[in-house]
Structure formats: C-alpha cells, structure tokens
Image 1 (cartoon, helix red, strand yellow):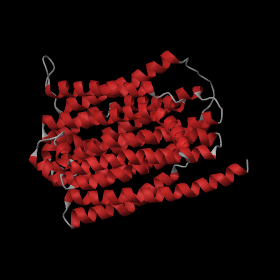
Image 2 (tube, rainbow, N blue to C red):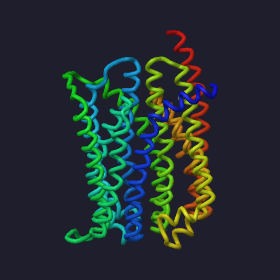
Image 3 (cartoon, one colour):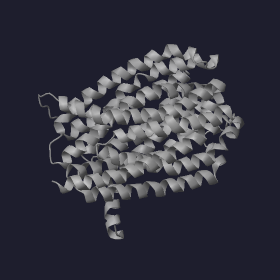
Image 4 (tube, rainbow, N blue to C red):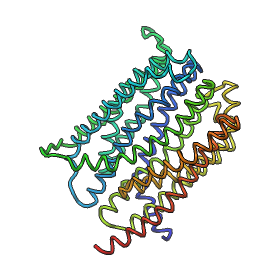
Length: 443
C-alpha cells in the first residue's frame, strides 16, 4: 500500500476513531475519577473498592462482552445492504435481561467476601459498595447497547460526548457523596458506589433519548430468534475472552489483597494508568470492527486487508509513545494518583514492565477488533485462554508466590501474556486472510 492509499484509509478510520477515542478516554477518566476520590478519602476505602471491583467486574464484563456482538452483527448486515433499525428493541431487551442476571449474580457474591480471607476491616466496606454498585448494571448495559447500535450506523459523536459529560457527573457525585457537603452526609464507600449508579444511569438514558429524538422508533412484530442466536454465537466468545483477561488482572488484585490492602490499591492505580492509554487502541479496535464488518459483508478483501494494516500501525505508534513516557517518568505519573510512600515504593519497579505491556497490549486489542469484524470471535477466546490461563498466570504466580516478588512477579506474567497474544493472533490473521481470498474468488 502506497502513502496516498494509507492516508485515505487512515483518514476514514480516524474519522470514526477520534470520537471513540474521546469517549474511550472518558470511560478511563471515569474509572480514574473513582480511584482518585477513593484514594483521597482513605487507602482502606481504595483497597475495599478495588477488591470489590476486581470480583464484581468479572461478572459485569461478561454482559458487556455479550453486547459487543451488536455492532459486529449489524455492521456486517449493513455492509450487505440489509436493513437493521428494527433490531433496536430486541437489542435493548437482550441487554436488560443480561443486566438483571448480572445484578442478581453480583448481589449473590456478597456473602462470600468474608470467606475469602481479606482483611477483616475491609469486609463491611466491600459489602456496602458491592450492593449499591450492582444497580449500575441496568444503566450501563443500556448505554452499551445503544452505543453499539449507533456505531453500526457510524454514529459515534453523540454517545461519546455523553461519556465526556459523565466524567464530570461521576467526579462531582463521587466527591460530594463520599465526603459530604451541606445537608448531604459523608457516605464514604457507599457514596462512591451511588455515584457510579447515578453516572451510568445518566449515560444510558441520555443516549436512548438521543436516539428517540433523532430517529423514528421502528417496531416489527416478528421473532428475532436468529438474531439472538447470532448475538450469543458472536458475543459469547468475546465475553469469555474479556472475562479471562479481567480474571487475570482481578485475580492478582484478590490474591495480593489477601497479603495486604496496599497491593490491591497499587494494582488499582496501575490498571487506571493502563485504562487511560488503552482506550485509544480500544477505540481504534472498535472502529476497525465496524469497517472490517462492512467490508466483510460486502466481500471486499482489499478493504479488509487495508483497514487491518492501518489500524495496527495507528495503535502501535500511539502505544509506543505511551510506553516511552511511562518508562521515562514513572514517579511523576504515580504521584498523580497518590502521595502514599508505601504505594509509590511498590509501584516504581513495575512501571518498566507496564511500559512493555502497553506496547504489545495495543496491538493485541486491535487484532481482536479485526476478528470481531470478521465474526471470527472464537479464536480471540482460545488465544486468551492459552496466553493468560495456560502460560501467563502460571509464570506470574511462580515469580510472585514462589520467588516472593509479589505484585512485580505477576506483572512479569502479564507482560509475557501480552506478547503471546500478539504473536498468536497475528499469525492467525494471516491464515484467515488467505482463506477469505479463496472464498471470495468463488463468489
């Protein structure tokens, strides 16, 4: 591909990506806001919220992963010149059923906290935070569904503007409800959880009202059995892949939390740093899913190849810059979150590993987006199982527990995992493209 063609495809991809980057960074800053306020309130509250989040987010993200199938399915449908607007109501129904299941499951794990060996002082805070947090599933799943639906039509600006507004809603609510002001009492961890419910409900309802304002609601009385089946077939591997990744990160938080709440707090800050940068390649990945989905629906192999290559280059350039910055200014970055000397001491050695992880993690999520667009999501799940559960976590556990390197040891395993993901998915993509070339020639 020459420079002129690269520019054309990069421009088209970035046209979709930039609003998503804005929204992605917004999501990251919502999480950063949670960590920032919790850390300012107390290290114990940060530890309790971090451990609770580590456990419940695995459940929460299962539904989010399932809903990722909406844009993958509908973009392929639209690429084949078929209508898709009547799929909104079935998508929302599917989302809210998932939300209710996630809600009940999150509530159901609360009694097990005291049996998992955490510091006794953290248990009451974890119970309160988790119970209130569970109610946020309904608003967030609604937002995810609406955002995915609009993305399939390449409408990306308004949903992501709503995320930006939600940063301030969330931060304001966090601070006011945690610390209290005027007639509003100090609620600590309960206030942090309630702020999450408020901000996510605001996001879900806002994007729904936008759709109802801009478009006529199309209701078609027919069974959507095939659609629900496709959502499960596409979404379940995505969901399991996400859950495996979250399990790896959150298992680290849980295991380290049993040793000391400081390690859980440190891991939470490290994840906040990752999320801040990760949302850029994640946004590129989502845009790539849409573009590759349209191209796959239209049986256009050249566009599939070009969007795949351009997206990988964009992601890698950005994450390479982030890795360099993290490696050069580790202390300054950590101090944006905390001034606790013990936390800083734990985190400084890990920042080099974090920089390596950044570079490879951006590429693997972009490759995953390509496979979603091709509706080949099983390979993403299988690769995550191999890289995280079979290789990465055992290596991390060896260094963390046996070699007694604690959190640093686990991050050795995560770095190895990220490299493996890139290698396996990259090789599989080359094989898939050759297979598609033969299939499209027969048409």
